[in-house]
Amino acid sequence: MTRNEIYKAVINILSEIVEDEDWAALGMEDNLKGKLESMDFLDVIMELRKRYGVEVPEADYGKFATLKGCVDYLEPFLASK
Image (cartoon, rainbow, N blue to C red; front, top):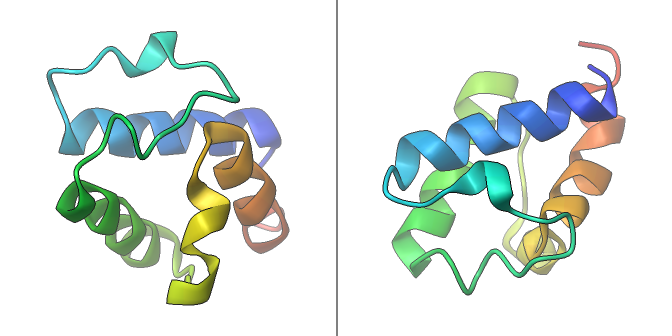
């Protein structure tokens, strides 16, 4: 997957989990945790595991604070998919 495809995949997951938020308007450096409740954040992590087989250890959750952080973290795992 390219960075753009990863970005779209994350936006798609966010949109499915929290439907009433305009995720398309989210900037790459905007804080996700400010827009997600704790359980929603965990749902995003679980959905990434389910769809793409990416295991995210709890110690790495902080790397998902922004959309850019998500893409940066996921890129090495999804580049070959």
